[in-house]
Image (tube, rainbow, N blue to C red; front, side, top):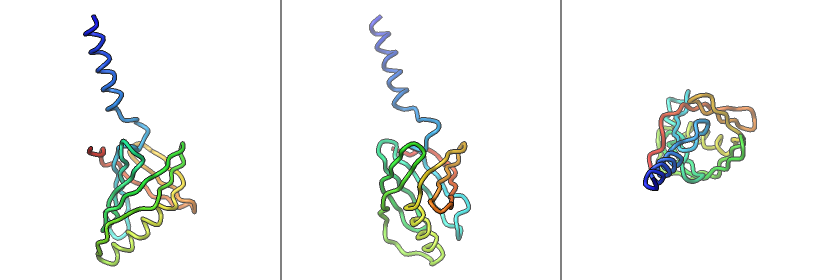
Length: 132
């Protein structure tokens, strides 16, 4: 009987560790919908630490975030330093500036909506889970 209980305990522990909270963006990756200048802008959230990362049109970026209820704030972003076409560089700069202004978020199904302090919002569509 003890082997059976050990097996059940192991299965429950594995399930708890591998299951993602359905109403959470943690451990998921997103792509900005309606990005300016046809830029590819992505945003991902590490499943183990309060870290974010993605591609901001031309460069890859990363940083730390703080989450308290529905309040979300992004710390300063580090980024690679590649140059690209002016329209994409402008889209990238505006996006990274917006991240520093985010105050809250909302999830609507597979959509992540980031809300800035001045009423501006950006909508992202979930593209998958973070590979570890």
